[in-house]
Image (tube, rainbow, N blue to C red; front, side, top):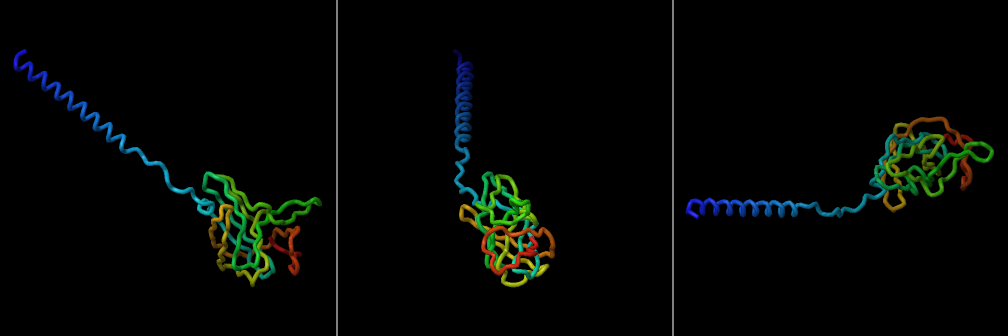
Amino acid sequence: MNTATQTTARTRRIAALALAAAAALALSACAGTAAPAATSAAATEAERLTVTDAWVKAGDEAMSAAFGELENTGEDPITIVSAETELAGRVELHETVENETGEMVMREKDGGFAIPAGGSLSLEPGGNHLMLMELGGPILAGEEYTFTLTFADGSSSTFTAPAKDYAGANENYEGGDMDGMDMGDAGH
């Protein structure tokens, strides 16, 4: 082989080795950029709940109710097990159902309010609602009041709701201890 042929062959080998080295380096760099495994904790039930259109019935009776739209933004169901507010000595999670005589009655919801993954629950007059009992004073239209919801996982969240004048959905209460409370026109 002459010198020119040897130089060309050597140049080609060096170029091929350099190309192979560059390819190996590029592949190893790609392998090093793999995303780390997710390490964040799952969101609590409270973090997955949004409350919209919340309101509370204004009045000066012994009882009232709070309403709104509850949405579960998560991928797992959530359950609200209790609620509280400074307005009332006692708050119950209520449903309205038809009793054996066909009358619509309110009663405490066994097991709390379950909201499916990606679903919602309406709290509304004549339906599910937060029943406020043993009120400490009147609830004034236009004022805002704070509520705290507690979930099955132990987490909690708060929301505020304005008071509105409302008359309607006059159900009766079924069961529970309602001594000293006028249920004739509960207005919930």
